[in-house]
Image 1: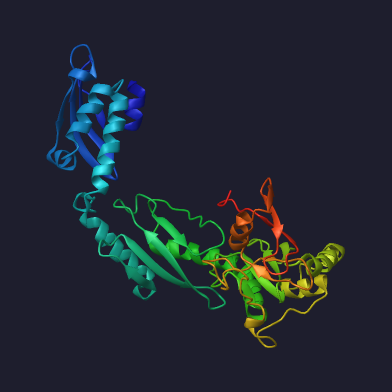
Image 2 (image 1 turned 45 degrees about the vertical axis):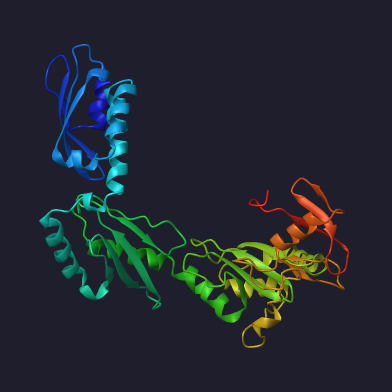
Length: 371
């Protein structure tokens, strides 16, 4: 028990050989609280007494009954301290005024680092001077934002960093690191992804993208229109963007099957030195409709059940396989429609029924949420 107590609470020490008196600090959410624990001679927690600093009493106000309960029920001091810290964390999060206030040197350090980095790179800073948004531009002129959440012990503790990227943002940080060095690391990450974004920018500008509706820099997937109710979903590898991506053809079987056969037959022709869009054209032996030649409305066909194109984020991706029909539906709409029909049947996660338009056989897979 003693080793576990010291490991989890290195600032809480026994003051006698019997180890019935402990004094020191416990740390919760970057704040240290003075605590003294006096155990009875038999070492049982049920008869223990706690002496708290005024800050600790303030946070525990309204939680006294829980602390007494934990004191009666905990098996040992290690368990009780862990329970006490959990209660403290809840209390701190529910009281904004009790949150840790950084020391003066935190602010002087922050100002010094921003002067080195350049105030022109600062897009936003919150009223607590904890959260910063820094702008960055890659070599192709794309604008990016790095969000930095500083700890109260900055720079001794590494900040939390996030950005709109298709890969995890791995940042190296030491107690000697600065925001300027952090920004420089971010720029290197952006440069490593330049080719990936160039591939997607070409696809976005020269084809009609059905999904995502508003692509972000972190999106690796594009659903590209090929024809009415026919599209291909490609998933690019951010680290190897010109390699053959994962491809999934969507649409009625009579339209998709020839394309799938060409993809399988010509896959060996893929040239990593050429652009992804050019390779897709060559492998599928097609020309993609582009903003220069087609209107997007040609491919934005509404669902035959709800009569809308977008259902939340989803677009119609289930199509009747009968060539004379070819009506598209949202997966959720078709699932609910077929499930309501007495003539429909289900096998595992697939529902079999009739097309609402032509009454020909049609199937739909249940999504994870529906199942």
